[in-house]
Image (tube, rainbow over all chains, first blue to last red; front, side, top):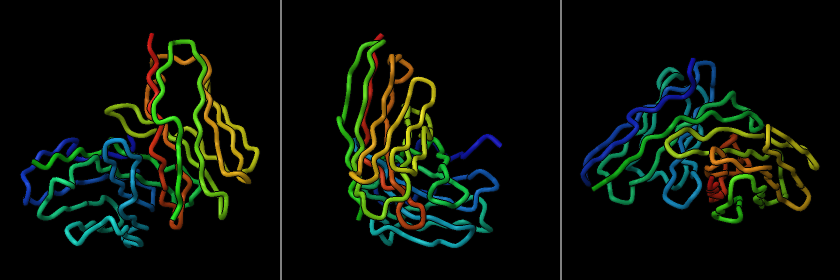
Length: 114
Length: 111
């Protein structure tokens, strides 16, 4: 296992289009987190899963955003009707669940909305 | 809502200089602090997870201290090298283990 992988690494889209990102966590990790990072800021929490259950969604996550983790394995994050303000780095991380456990991050998907 | 502050925002040093950054966080309900290093085009990499007041951790030339009573942690880099150039992030976990990140300290080490 080589760690957390995210696909695609870069995505350029036009405003109003839908986009979907994928995250493959470390296989034995039950927790999966999504974060978003914009220029000059630290990553901000978006949502997380314990196995297949989505346990929390940030207020940052508007109705245009949806995330899934079918069967508790990979996860997808979809953004519908993209806006220029959605342009950011979207990071995925996985862990064994306890707050003291390290979260292992993917390299992120950089989204540019034109 | 946790408020995590890091200073300075950016730092430019010469190779061989030692440097340190600060992370401030609310001291109430504390139970851990994570430090990450994030190099451009790579994944954020965990450096330390600190839990106990007075904790000191070391990894090569990088070390960190923790004061949970006053709510701060210091990260030290001894003899900075160009490969240390990165953004250094601190984050206490909140409910559910989600990390609340500071804005980061961007370190640039010139050869």
